Image 1: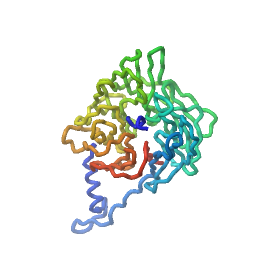
Image 2 (image 1 turned 135 degrees about the horizontal axis):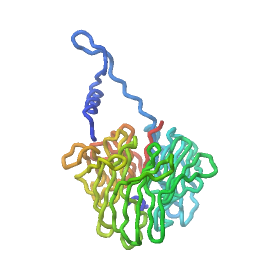
Image 3 (image 1 turned 90 degrees about the horizontal axis):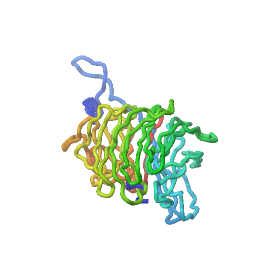
Image 4 (image 1 turned 135 degrees about the vertical axis):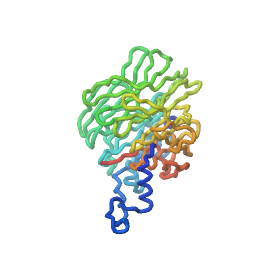
Length: 397
């Protein structure tokens, strides 16, 4: 199991809003004689529906199974699936990838597999799970990686997923999936593989790893695929390259990246070095097409591939897996992140999962074997759900 997990800018108006919330000041109230203000405190906005999902294991050895758990609208944790052990030596029922709720929070999309069944990438079949009954329906023909994000929701009845070569779509209840287009290729000892992916509107951002000769450098780029025209868009963002080891790469991931909720900007990691002698990296922020690139989080080190997620308000990026410790941090996307930057915060706990932001950008969840809640600027994460892995947070419609 360890193999799977080896892997702002705060505007002045934000400070004003915080001060007003603390002191209960009214905004826009009528004025009366003497310059006073009438009217009660501003009501706290109703939060959007939201849900956190993850997986936990029970049993041991070839009888171990993994089940999905969830907390909806910050409610108590509840078990969604109830997997029955099949006592198989090669058991694909142990791990789940990032479980993403549908926008209406009625279904969960996740892949299930195991690292024990292969020496390569951890992968498994993709399922749509009824969030009430726990019934799981296999998505026809889908087999994706668990340690990176390669699937998601288009809307409440349509999903997308990608693999090394292609992008697909599927309508819930349909008999088969639709191949939308090609994002990778291979020929002889060379390849160009699709990997980590994010859908924003009609644009799928995906990481491409390429190797021209066996044992040669692996080069990473961030590309875009148009879900309407079914074509890879021109241009790319360089994410660096590494020299692989003379060994099995196992479940190797790639440099971290994420895309702003509105799809206009990206935050990403650029790497160099080798697996044998160590990876070095830096972090950047740019427009979706790569223009206007600026370096962020300068006072950090990351000698490994990371996981990254931009906050819902687009001001901060959370990073996990940036070993050595402290390997979890948040940084502004519009400041350089030098030593002493008030928006650069390091956190206790070597989280290896994706960091997943809360709806109000006040903090994020990540897993260290337990699901921890991190509040921006508070050094220690609070253990929130025991024994959880691969958390994923959904802001519902």
